[in-house]
Image (cartoon, rainbow, N blue to C red; front, side, top):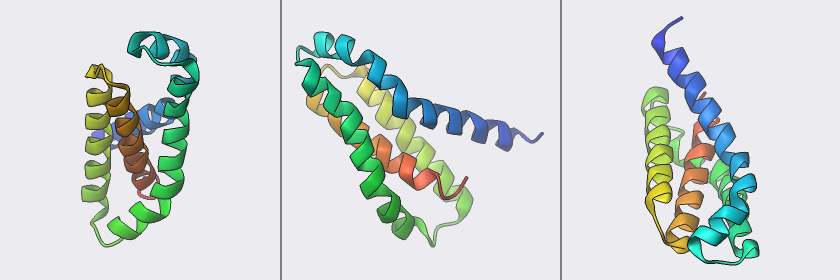
Length: 112
């Protein structure tokens, strides 16, 4: 199997996991960032809104891009958003990175 297929499989796994795994971490995130659990729950909602808004927006934006360039761009934005989110101590920055990750995730799905 070509390396590209393995990388694609890892990207699909990471993006799928990213959507849902945060739900189990909400209480710990709330404690860590000193916000209410309800506020930390907005991180899941922000991702969902990013996906809803991002799907048609990213499809329109990237429809003329070559498939490989599009995939690579969206995967890189997704990865950078998660690295920044993992390293931040700011709830606002984490919320913004969730939206950017969702937009990249939404752009990735039509191409894989």
